[in-house]
Length: 282
Image 1 (cartoon, rainbow, N blue to C red):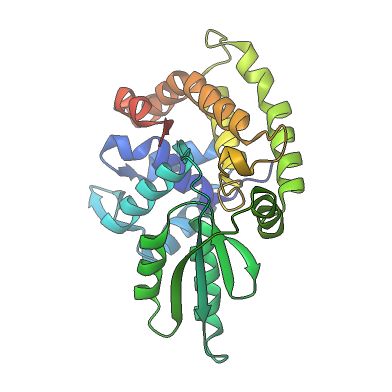
Image 2: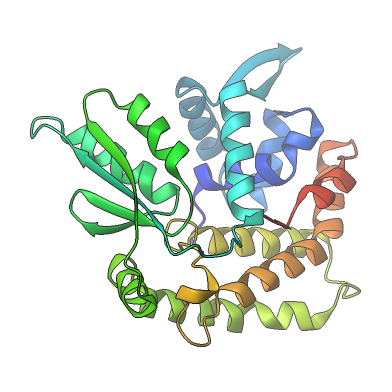
């Protein structure tokens, strides 16, 4: 796997370093990224860029540079963790949240931002400017409207009154066939780790690498899976099974991976709080 340094840094802070005061010495983050064959020069370049983008502030302790997460990035990590570990599981009321936007032709950047924001919240694209979600996301659409004053964004309730038509809408808004195949591949890849059991001793370094693989692979589903209500799911839909497997393997690898990171940092992490907060269903 070709690791992306930016994604690795975000995942390391999200799963480990935020539980060590949300900061890390340059030498320690360099040592952690070396586990994934990232060169020290690449670490320094990426951290410098991320600091300029507002991810970090820095301070000096002797000759050592310390990188601390900004409040903005802590909010991003909280939001991302909620998306990964908290699955929507609501009773289907037969209503869709519809977001419709109008953007001047000259404002392409605004149009792209709207698409990314709607995708992040789990909307699917029915037409170029019409997006649907089977969940109550009226508040989210209104917030998006407030953040994009150059666009006209409307939030509406809608429904077909027919279960077959609703399932057809879901199939048109999301590529469920490909998503299902990718979930099946995820299950085949990570089921052996779950079957291995929590007492398997493969070392903390291996556990860290496997856990980062797991998070990276599962995170790809966040922009693609609308977490359909059961009434709208295709037959034998693997999304829930994949979510359960992800949580089980993530918890299983957690203690060894966290202990390994702690050994590099030279201090314990608040691992118990991390596990307790993870993998909730809402």
